[in-house]
Image 1 (cartoon, one colour):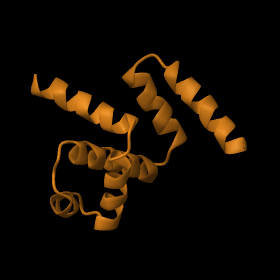
Image 2 (tube, one colour):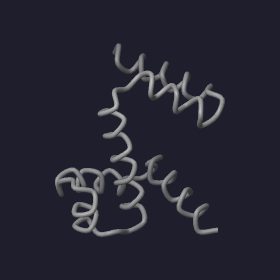
Image 3 (cartoon, helix red, strand yellow):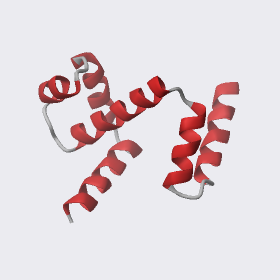
Length: 96
């Protein structure tokens, strides 16, 4: 499938970038400010769910629907979810 091939290629390109600053520039070149805002919001959602915050608290503070949060929560409950592991690692680094 074309989308799968493109995603594999993008993943490879992203893996080859030279650190966070270059990755940020790459994202800013590919995505609109609105898309970047959505991406940042999704990351905040994952971080907070992984930290064990309640869905209602997250919805109120981030101004997003419980439906979106529930979807994210369901995903994080699956085995082998990379975003959950990344959020947990980030949380551990911040608490050290």
